[in-house]
Image 1: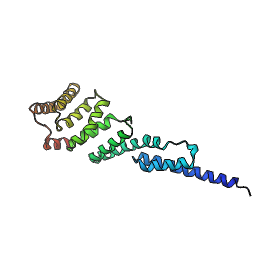
Image 2 (image 1 turned 135 degrees about the vertical axis):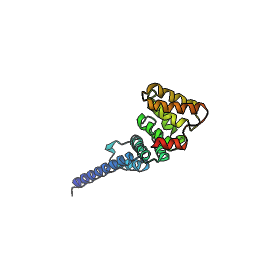
Image 3 (image 1 turned 45 degrees about the horizontal axis):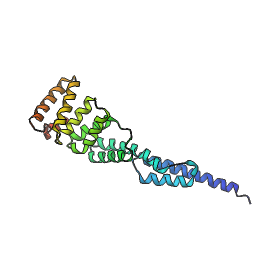
Image 4 (image 1 turned 60 degrees about the vertical axis):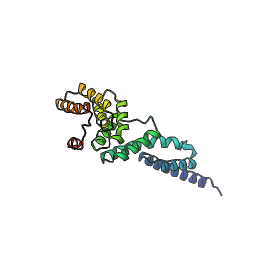
Length: 198
């Protein structure tokens, strides 16, 4: 009795199952999950060693990207604590993950407008590190700095913004905020934040 075709069929079935597990692991990693894709990559690697998968590396490559996508979704839904948790997990898994200054700056602005300045401040700082000369990024960070007690930093950021913008209305608004900051007060009262949210 010749078992070769049966053995070949079994090997093909294992390869197919390994591929399915690997694809499932990629999908889960892109959703920001860690344990589930790791398990799937490990199973795939055991079933088909020719895949030459490094499960840890695969997860560390895919999961941060998925977490950043979650961060954007949470931010759009005004779930700023969850957005920052996803951001923190992403940069913990991969400190070199590619980040968008614009995305972080938007999270900074939106979170600050909704009274989450302290929570979103790390995203604000990272946005400025990525684009230190961008006026809007500095402006957004100032909105987080003022309520968290960094008056000097907020003033500096507003000054950078005002030196670069040609928007007269925005300049007048920032001048008013600067005057309040220099008087030792936070210009971002609940009423001011509500008017900024529109």
